[in-house]
Length: 513
Image (cartoon, rainbow, N blue to C red; front, side):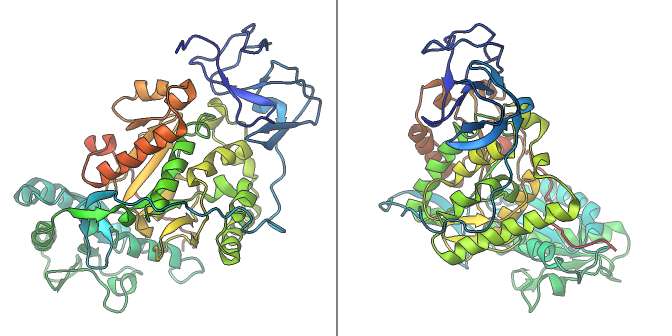
């Protein structure tokens, strides 16, 4: 196709705005198909008015009101955040419940991947030695030990793919019994039980922290290696000098490596996949290309019997009526409302307006406010019924489409989905971000072909072909579904190739002391 021709995308027939597709945007005077003339230049991804709008008239995209004109807007004008007033948040009362709870469709059978089966029935997509800690004070020691383990021990155990430190900033200097303290504690516990670690986690303790190993892993649930409890306490009297600590960690690590090295990939059904979906550095194309393609792949995964988590309370709050309408049961709808109410109360306590969510990069990419951003974000969840809700830090206990409540922060969302048990992560981006996780493969999906070209060795999939008309949402959705199976079977993502990963970030509502 001719990429020089002016091109816009209107999401719904009733929308009175469309976004500009062309790289670099379109200048004033451009004549669009149908005869509309741009009265001013409109950047790529930004909205153009398709009709004259009076002061206070709704501006409609995705078939919903994303704002109100703050003054007269002429047909052909650039509709930016400067000329919009944001709507009030949808009330959490009298929401539709289960009115659009669509069944997943016919079973999608016969799709498999090569994974590592664990004793508890979960399946890993990677075979990793994980080292967790009870307190942030030991992070430097673990970091030093990880370097030596990677250099000196890993070459002897070729079936173990890497060693990762589950570092965190917690364990002491906090009100350990305060309301909300259970969230970071259970998050650390469940991170340690991610399927990619094969029930084989080392635990490093300082010895004087408020969060001792017995509290982190109560009732004898400390992960073990070769039948021996894997807790190394640095303040133990037998450690004389720093190298004595490192030697103890090396000996313990080798026990785990021997056990992990015996694991082999085996053929597993797609129903063993636990996929977390997330977006970051979003732009106006997120809800047009990448996120709808992820939503299509989500439906395929659910039809195959797998589990998909979507999250980000802040970015679905303004579409809560669409989500409760898809709740499989009234209890699921009530749980979603509970998580949204927590967020509303949080904003009130902090005297913060929800409009603060949309970042400068989001706005530069064409997203005027959180309402517009939310409409593009929730489509990652596909179209099927939402069968469960997970509170922050909890571990999955069911399959299907799950709403996992997390803040919108990329790092906290990824951490909480990892604690829930995900074994593959999907991350869409329009502005671009080198986000990655050390413990779970992250598939990066670009919303625009320009980004996919420019960051050719960071993006795993180009969804921009949907905007250009070269591919359909269904085409890219199937492409992503197959890519997920390949990555779950061991294919490396670009983030893994470069060993890009962000530090884990705990959601910690408990006060510091």
